[in-house]
Image (cartoon, rainbow, N blue to C red; front, side, top):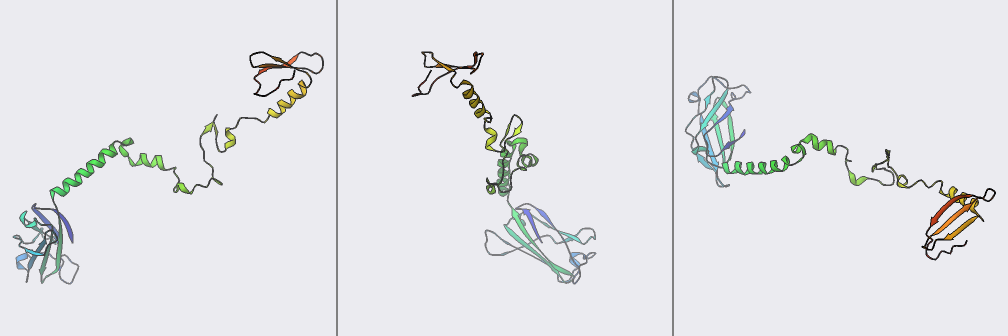
Length: 230
């Protein structure tokens, strides 16, 4: 089994003993009564050679439960990596690998977590996951796969009508041709053009039959090069 412990800090290792050759918890016999019982601890620092480490305590059973513990002092666990091997004729061999963390390691992790928290706290709703999901649920899984020839994008609404095509932005010009034709036929031969002397011309369209009162009067600014024929 493998555990993590704080370096140079007294601790206890918790583990089960199994009766040899079975999967049953071994219980009811004190460590000192076991045959050929041995506790072998080794350590390495900075990836150096394995070195034997003495352990003052011995495994103790927790009230006949089959669960045992081994107390270790701060100096005994003041190493980078340790292993504790426990053997006896009556039990299956138990090996415990101990990874140690220093207070410096923990302080570094705390600093990183605090930095992340500063960023997430500044997000809407402190970066709540549900808020992010609500804002991204409608995004396509692969935006780059959009096919402009077959797909439509709702880019807004005009007077309450969804915009799905460039034609939705165009003015209604369907009747302009009809209106021009009407004015032409109505005013043909009956248009009076008056130069206003200010660069504009007033056009008066009269009815071709009596009564000859004006039906349309407008003032226009001729384009450069346009010749006005009265």
